[in-house]
Image (cartoon, rainbow, N blue to C red; front, side, top):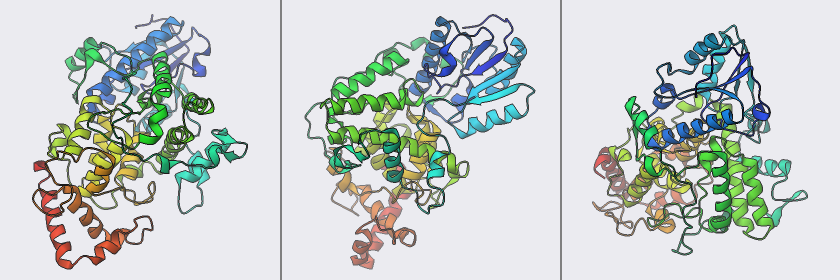
Length: 515
């Protein structure tokens, strides 16, 4: 996808998560505009990424560039193995400006702080005319959430979510919420009994063995299973829309009931797997919400299923982005509990005797995906209880999941999962003993460890770590009204019992690789 060296007036940069074919940039073809796309080591190497994530972004970028050219746009595409690729965005832009004698540089607002800063520095130090455009994707501006909560001591997603529902008239009956309530979360917490069975995988399949070979040949490091010959993620808008329609038809009717359920027998259950397509902007949040709302209006799905799914997009997704842009860059360094432990080796292999973690991490390594409860209440839960360094946990989540881009992943990991921000994002630490995992999954059945024991050698590690976490952090957490009966129960324990729990937890934290 090399363009002729004919001069252009304007270079327009398209990043790998800006594959929005509906953007106003593309409404008409301009001969004096050159679209620039690049696969660079700057982006493959800043954290260690899952192989499927690298393949998916590069393959989707190549397909997007091909479609732009077919529509008559001029495109200069730098592949990962291109001899002219300098592997840094500013350096490549400077070279292309010189090649094409461009006078102006345009780009869409990046969604990651580091890229936003990098491009700001570039534009401040070039003689080119520069202009940043909106990505035309989100419901909210970067600073909108911060403005809503300006002057308030506490940020609450529910307050923001209700404003978004009313403002955008989503699931509303005039000024009242459809169904008579804003939130049906209490209806969305059922364990999966085995039926109905999860629908057939509705994602497309691709063979990207050649692309994967080129990525390996230039020395890009990765982890996880590439599955390049049977690659199962949408790589262009039409595929993403078809996947969305299949989800609404086949899985959404059961999503509400079982969105928090986990099973070793069914890794997808009733989740949409649309987050990658959404986060690289193949499809918009508005059209996904419209499709879900229309299914409810037709009577195809319950209000609980529709509201539960819409809340994730119109509420949580937009809210988390607002938190990210308001609190960065300091947010990335938050570590309220001063946790310093490195990740155990089995985060990279899934080989642990804890069945829940073996399944959730093993699935993540194989599929580049795990749903929100696996991320929060299995992997994240253990990470917080074990005192893993939140920055290391963040880097692992950012690398392992195909939908992970820092604006959405960082607050979810540091704030929601690890409570490292001290309660900015979440109202309490999301931790549990084995009881919650057993209630919501079949993971405890057949596990090496006993879910009912606390301190014996075969006791589930979650149990001692859970009680010791609250014991160690009593000064910070005892007055939190959302924690419930933990501290009254702790205070009923004898000093000897608390000491035995602490000793067991210390042993577990010192021997994480052996669990």
